Image (cartoon, rainbow, N blue to C red; front, side, top):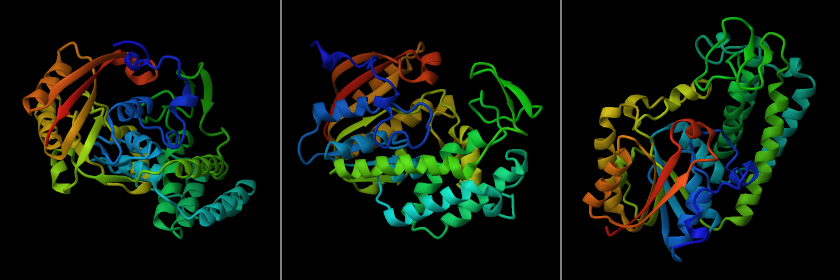
Length: 364
């Protein structure tokens, strides 16, 4: 085998290609680039097939399946991930959103008049947000309550993506942390000096610009996509209980030393009032990783009749090989193995430099 089909590095792609359509809606750490599930679907899906991603994350696979004309479903235990995945594929009230964006535009020009009286977003939120910023965020959340559910979630996801940048958290930390002094040096972004007391932050203006871009992309997605996406908040270890089937599955599971997503997105969880999944997330307890993965693979084997593609990082301890062997232990037949260099994802470029793409045949 040779040519484009074997080149899984996608080294020539930039942000424009890897964050197109609705993929840019929210920064979700360590998501795989959409070109991977797109290629898998193009290679193995047939007309009428249903696509599955048991570790759905923020819905990359579901977006690509819909764009290619396939119905899909996916699961994730993280409520923020599920909210993002739904927003990236759901239909909204366009007229109501336009009205809301116009309100944001007006508020941006006279923020003091539109800020809420209360600055309380959650317990001890005053440590994380300046008073003027918090009152603007509270006003946005209060105004969004009158929107329909899908439209409200659309606004909330847009706001969530901006929260850390509007907070007092250091810009050079993955997990939000408050600097010891309001003024600090951002070591990640060219050693620039940041002063949280004086820097210009207009939440109304920032969200207005982000929602306009998101709305245009969502309209483009629905003009293009003919497949229907169904994101579920569900533990992948209980996949079969949904009573759904699929013919193509592609997923990138959490790693054995997975990031603590709820800590990384703690501001979103608290501002939006989402329940944190806690240690139930796979990868949070390394000793449980292989038993948990075995339980998920057993569930996939029950619901899938077709091709299963597993994208997993190379491990010096051979964990990727152990998971591959688990798939075969559940009756999956290994068809192809591809190896790719991780170039497009800055986080993994530091820790895991290569991934394996394993393609299995599975008969439920």
